Length: 186
Image (tube, rainbow, N blue to C red; front, side):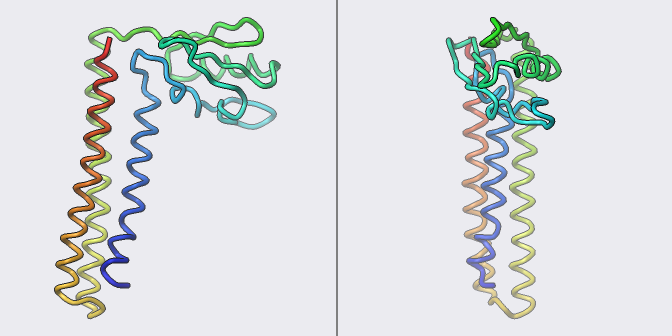
C-alpha cells in the first residue's frame, strides 16, 4: 500500500467523526426547535424500536414548535411515551392526530452549561481525529521500516496527513462556533 492510500484510509474515519459530531450536536437542545432533536428518537412500535422519522412526518410550525404527524395515529401514545422517557425535557401535547412539542428558551445558566458540554464534545472529537492521524503515521513508519515506502514517501505522507488533519480539526471548530452561536442566540 503506497503512502497516498494510507492517507486516504485515514480520511474516511475522520469524515465519519465529523458526521457523528454534527449528529450529536444536532440532538442537543438550543432553545430553538429543530427536527434533529427528535428524528432519531427510538419509539416502541410494531414490536420493535424504530426511529421517529420512520413513523411520522416531522415539521417546524414555528421557531419554537415541532409538529409530529404519525402516519398511523394509533402510534401517538407510543411516540408520546418515547418523548417523555427521553432526556429532552419536552412535554408532548396532542390533539389525537398531531403531537406538538414546544421548545422553551434556555436560561442564561443553562446556556453556559450547554457551551461547556459542547466544548467538551468538540475536544473529544478532536482527540478522535488526532488518534486517527496517529494510526496512519504509525502505518507510514511501518511501511518505511518494511521497505514498502521510502523515507521521502513517509515525509510526503506525514505532510499530507497533517494538512488533512488540520482541515478536519478546522471543520470541528467551525461546527462548534455555529452551535455556540445557536445556543447564545435568544
